[in-house]
Length: 516
Image: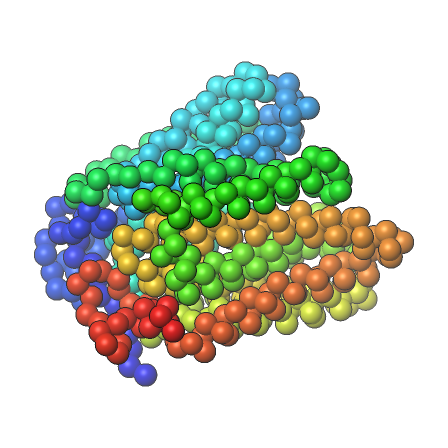
């Protein structure tokens, strides 16, 4: 198969949806000017820093949370400090994607960073539980929108065939944040003050704002803005109920309690109402053209299922290593390092292969298959097995995850027209977020209320059963990825308006997959 040569976007002229790098000189499609390349790298670095701040904030705060709660007398509101951010970030994700397609990608990124900085400054100066929770929600809105806007802007400054590799680097930021965050939070809290965690966000955020505003220029949109306010309100209600169920069920309230059952009923009601609301909207927040696209729907479903499995593993594997194998908390953390390294390395490696070949559909197949196999083998582990075997299986699991999570984002961006990239990206990221939230809650409830009780405290068998159950979502994801792959190998083509057709009857490969 011939190598797929990436076509770089023309960074000196563009549409309202495409970024333009200031002061660059025109070059050929395959050999962009050196100045434009440097500026594109600078922008991608800034996008990565934005994602890093949002990801780091969650891991840093986890370490400093007891000190923060004691200092502002928010011990009774401890759970709301976390829930406020999670809820706001989840709600902001799809709305930010739609707004970026309506008003432009750059304005939404700058607004998201500004909101994140304002929220961080408010938290740093908070003196009461109410102020802390309120500004934590403001920060969550900025953090959730940042995750979408950064990945969407990659589509503006990086050619389609190179996006998987670039997004793999950005995706690896989450792994770095999970490793760096806890010790950084502890160090800042013990040496200076927990408030400096958020002052650092303010300083770094201002640098990102100034750089992106100065380097990236966009044409003014000629399209009249149209907002689906009814859809946004209904979707916000739906996601609020989902987040609260995932946060409260099995912890604050029992699964069969009235609050949880009531929230589930409200979720169903909002979901039913959302369908006709979106059908009547002139510019729906979740356009049918996005979720009816076969590639987008399949990859969103794969992302949802794999997040169920991933967050179950991230949450409960350290507990498994400590309670069953007898490792300390520090040792269990170190045993997870190969897993995180495998995620980052295979994600970057897959991106490089996609850049050369243009084929990405095979990677979710291989990744979901590896994850399923690893979980089945992890379920058979017991305290007598060597540590090296555990590390090897976790590495295989990480390699599988690395082949899926960022690849599906690049695949979705290649499957939709440029004006829908923001909405489609947000749709997949929302599916992953909801999957992760429900995964932790569902498997935690399954473990504590069903498995442990029935097995009468046999923790080894309890964990084994839970890992077997967590293999089911990855197995369904594998079947979905195989189904999409058999429809025809999706290619990482550019979706610029002037892209030449590559398939029969003047259709792109992605449109053929959608139509079939």
